[in-house]
Image (tube, rainbow over all chains, first blue to last red; front, side, top):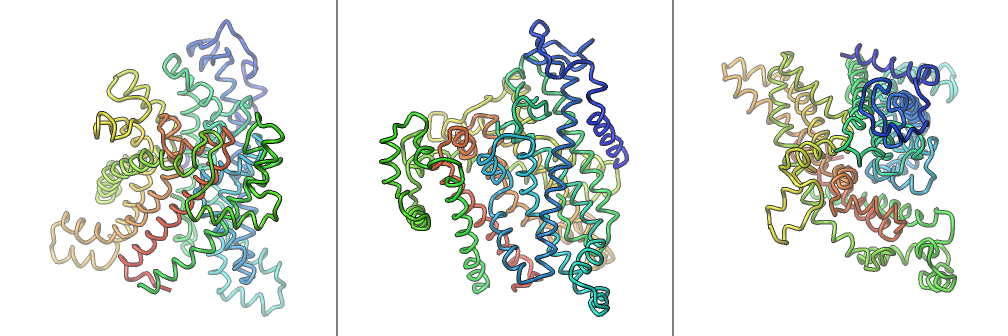
Length: 268
Length: 315
């Protein structure tokens, strides 16, 4: 299953990279004569209420999926990971930083995202930052626990005795041991970020409405659900398949992971 | 246990205070004059000046915070810009829908999550297990609003079995029968959560199955069903019970999307609409109430967990 998931994700990545070369129509081209056309030829997935080609928009949507997914993962792991590691290593600083994380975690995830989006303009970057912040909190907490465990291991004592400095211990001795749990965490954040971004788009607080993302496509065409149900089927299935694949890959990675950290990664 | 409970309650106070600072600062972080923001575009400069004075915006910000907090602690979050009624009344108006929706969703989650999870674990490795686990993973990957829209299309529009949107109070005409308005929304909200519970029940049953006391029970010739229920399930239930609590707490914010899809007059939809209407006193009020609820439920779950499982240290 994980292999199939990986193949699907590669296809999405390919679509994201090659979208401008392989789309049959411009995703923004309006064609009022052909609005709400059923799936067929030349519009494989039909057209929307402006007559835009759903297939081309779906391919461009793969770009947004990758942007949002990779962007939120990088943001969440970089900030959350650093906060978690530093907090566990410099425990006094940690007492302060982790309380801050606790406060952010007092807000339910989607609510935190909604509040932050209210303060910012709707844009791709802001959506990535907001989703990144939400998952940075969980990442920080998980990495805090793991780094605390690692800190007690003998090889860290050995490094200290041999005169290694703080940054050398943190980044050359502790970080390499955290790579596999970080990868697992990354896969789950990628999957959740898709669902969060789609929910934000749907509520009208995510990406700007003109951006062809799968979430926006669903949000725009929801009022046509009775007249043109296919408009929602394709973007919906694309989201489901991508999230499902990422979850499968994450599960497989977790199962093959370092047994020391099995209990720390939540994932569900 | 009592001392532990007290300590945990006490630890809640600084976090809640910090959260209240964030909620308070939220309106001040939005660029522009808060009074002008609160009054909306149609306000005259005189109105803005008057409200600024009334709100004490000319005073230092920490004084403003303490006045706001003092009022909030008495349940006074100010007046809604949109409804022109006290924020607390607006929130209370959505409470019935949201609470009933959450309870009904929990019923679905328990009815689906536990039996399927147990079945999946007892038939570990068979096609039943693979179907249940795969199905659960699939439902955890579905955007809730998408599922909701198709449930409306199939069961409300095509088949006409259930109403598609809205929810008249159970105190209105129709009484408890009005709960049928919440059937599709609760199923929508339950789907991804039931999926997580299925995975969790399965995982914790498999964990317990490996323990010595289960081998002993099997070795003394107990019926497999009896071992599964009395020895495995009962022990697995401890972590599952905690998950139910956390799920319930999470439902408060997840309901935002579902209530919007089904146009339910609940607290979740109130959040989104207030954000779109820029009704800041309501946003502040609702968020503070939800955060308090969320933290209290999480604390209760933690305490219940410590009480159920004596191995959890009370440090």
